[in-house]
Amino acid sequence: MDLYSIHEILKRLPHRYPILLVDRVLEVEGRRIRALKNVTINEPHFTGHFPHRPVMPGVMILEAMAQTATLLATYTEGVTLDDKSVVLFAGVDAARFKRPVEPGDQLILEVEVLRAKAGIYKFAAKALVAGELAAEAELMCTMRRID
Image (cartoon, rainbow, N blue to C red; front, side):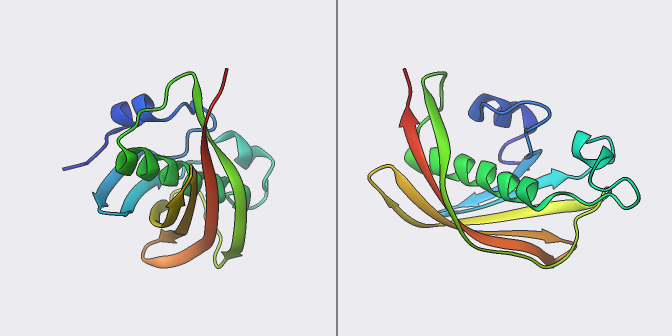
């Protein structure tokens, strides 16, 4: 059974098309999460990246990992984002891209909390396709109230 369907994700993330990049949460266990992104040819970035060989941009893979990290942070902290709160990137370290992600792939996003202190979170994140590492990075994010 899915932990979060797309309907639950829409309640927990402020992102919407075309930037919502998590389709389903497969599991959350302690300080770890696994989520799914179905990569489809009708996504707008594929018209220009690249017309002759569509490849998901690395920055979009990082964003998918960051959205998964946000779901984990809000789950572990027991908070729900509202229109007065955001989670923002604070840093990306050790990003590596190992294989292209193409339309038709299912991107499995695995994220683990490394540290959480004073509203700053550090995560280890991986993106896999068919069990093969596509990308990995350490992500730092901050949860903030906005007015």
